[in-house]
Every structure is written in C-alpha cells, then in structure tokens.
Length: 266
Length: 262
Image: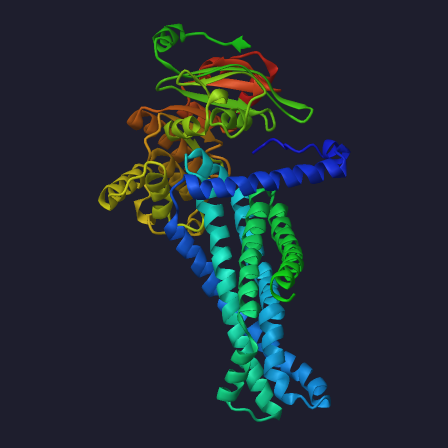
C-alpha cells in the first residue's frame, strides 16, 4: 500500500476525549459484529478446535508449572503465621479457599493474558500488516467469522478449563510443600481440602474465569485486527493486548467479588 | 487527460464493442485533508488488460481497493458489471468479490496454512465446495497453471518471492474470477522472475478470458501484459494509450516512465 492514510498532524489535533470515544465506539461495534457473526454465519468448527488446542493445550505446561509453584509458595508463606496461632491443621483449608476463590483464577488469567492475548494480537496484527486480512475479505470470506469468533470462543472455553486444572496442580503443589516440614497423608489433605470448599467458592470462581477468557480473546483480537499497517504495529498490538487484557481481568475481578459477596456471603 | 493514439484506431474500434465490466467516472477519495483520488475515469472492457502506471502515492492502489469495496469512495461513480459498488449491501459485495480476483503485492498467503490449504480456503469458505475430489482437482489445476504443483504441501515461509506470487495468483484464479486486479505483481522480483510473472498474467488472460487492471512500476511487465496503459499523477489519469503510443508521447511525466526504454 502506498498511501499513508494517517496524517500525523491531523491525528495530533484530535482531542484525547474524542479519540477515546472513537475507540469505545469501535470496540462496541467489534463486540456487536462478534455476536452477529456467531449466530448469522456458519461456524468454523475445525478452526475452533485448532484454536482450543493452540490456546488450551499449548498453555498447559506454563499454567501447570506456575500453579504448582504458587501452591508451594503459598504453603511456605502461610505456615509460619498459622504455626504461631497453633493452627497448622488449617493450612489445607486456607490454601484451598484462597487458591480456588481468588489467587488461582486471577493469576492463571494474568498468565493467559501474557501468553494468549499477546499471541493473538501479534498474529492478527501480522496478518494485517501482510495484507492477509484484506486478502481474506476481498476473496469473499469472512475474517471475523474465521479468525475472531473462533479465537474469542476458544479463550472463553479454555481459560476456565486451564484455571480448574491449575487449581488442582496448585493444591497438589501445596500438599508436597506441606510434607516438606509436616507430615500429612494425601487422603487426609484431600479430605480437608474438599471439606473446606463448597459451591459458593468454586462456582463463582469458574464463572469469572469465563469472563476473563472472553476479555483475553476479545482484547487480543481487537488489538490485532485494529493495528496499523507497519511492522512496529505488530509489537504495539501484542503489548497493548497484554496490558489491556490484564487491566480488564482486575476490573472484572473487582466486579465479580462484589457480585459474589452480595449473592453468597451476606 | 491526454489520449495518445497513433496507429491503433482500428484496434480501438473493435474493442469498443466489448462489454464494459468496470466503469469509473469522477471517482474521488480523501484521507483526512489529503485528496488522494481527485477525478478518476476508467473503463475496463471484457477480456482487456489495462496497465496503470504512476509514481508511488498517486492513488493507484486506492483505486483498486475502491473497486473491491475495501475503501469507500467519497464521490463519483464506480460501477462493476453495471452495479454501483457504493450502493451494495454486504451480501451483494460478497457476491461481487467472488467475481473479482485480487493479487496483493506480497501475495498475502495465509502463513499458517500450506499452499494447498491456501487454495482450498476460497473453495470451501466462499464457493462452499464439499467434494474433496473436486477440491483436489481444482487446486492441482490452478497450481499447474502457474507451474507450482511441486510446492503444493509447502508453507509460504518455505517459498521464494516469485513462488509466493505464483501461489497467490493460483489462489486468485481458483474461483474463476471474471476480473483480476494486480497490485504491483512484479515488485521485489528479479528481472527473469518478473518476466515469467508478466507472461503468466498474459497467459491467464488468454486461458481464463479475464479482464485485468495491473498496477505496476515495471515497464517490462507493462509492455508484456498490458493491452493499453494509463498514467496516473496526482489523483487523476493524465494519459492513456498503448505502450508504443505512450512511448512516443511528449508529455514530460509520461516520457519520464519511458526514459530507460530504447
């Protein structure tokens, strides 16, 4: 493409609030187009399954290692405090509740934002730079349906799955850490963990990871799809996707905590 | 606009009877305060190859992007097969795009897919073909047309620049478009490969009876592949005619394109 469509001087003259409003408008339009394309066009099952594999399976190792370390670290950090109160037996419960309710979903979502949102942002940004998105559009195919719908739905499905797997691995890490200093059988540890968590701990945590997954996929796709043309834009899209997705995870978490406490912890 | 014509009047008379597939009148397009297209007038007839020459930034790529609806014009009329592109809804635009092939400068192959998958993509997603035997047959025929059958299972990253252009061309012709728009098809290629691509464009025109607009800076490509040429400058066409006619033009801008041609 030969024409520089952005006039820098003009862009600088546009007030910040106007740019912000335009950005919000673009995102709302993208959001509507996403839903429209789920329901109005044929679904790309093979690409969806491929994305589930890429997003889910290929993130499993990273999520597993991080969760395991988190479980170990939490037990090591919690132990001295609980020992001081003579409540060492409370360690499995404390770990399970804090990990399943809050730390597991949020930290795993942040890791996924770093890995998945950046990868989607860079991939779609690169496709834009190399005119692959334009090529798809002028061929009569629908890039939103093929690239965006599949990726957003795959992250929405796989982040909760990764979160649940991460919770299990984290709790197992906690068990091993606990046995470094103390001695507790796996069956006792397992019984204490299961007894300490109930529906109100597990269900809201899974629900919020669905929203985390959606935010990660949506932000990654939006940033990649709306990147400028130029190699520098690929890096900007990837970076911006991680930062924005991470921010959204904390915003969603803050809202989810309020809603959960209203519904379950009156 | 200067119309340069010396010995081609008879040829033009026979051409004028052909159906006009693209008719552009007074096309305008601006980006911010910059008027990129000021007054574009063009007629592409069935079976004709028009070469568009012009310096970088004069609006050549913008013109062909308006034709496929990637950009919306600000004014003027742009009709493809007698239908105004700006008035088309999404469905009509999709149907039109099936009839128009677009070869991008880079080839724009989907880099996560093999050459075979790249070619299957428009067949399964756009033409909705489901018979794998039919799909394989068409993929192999298209690759054979561009002489790239041996690279069928390679990834775009394993192909050279010329091979990528050939693969892009195969993906373009696989849906049997009536019109092909070429955006600098020989840019970045060595002279021998450029000549091969130019000859390929010509053979595709003859084999598939396509009409084409070819944007290029490559005079050899213009000479080989074009039936007529149009020179663009500052958002408008300033001259048109055959290669030989324009070669003899006294217009300073036109002459500058031919200064290295003997």
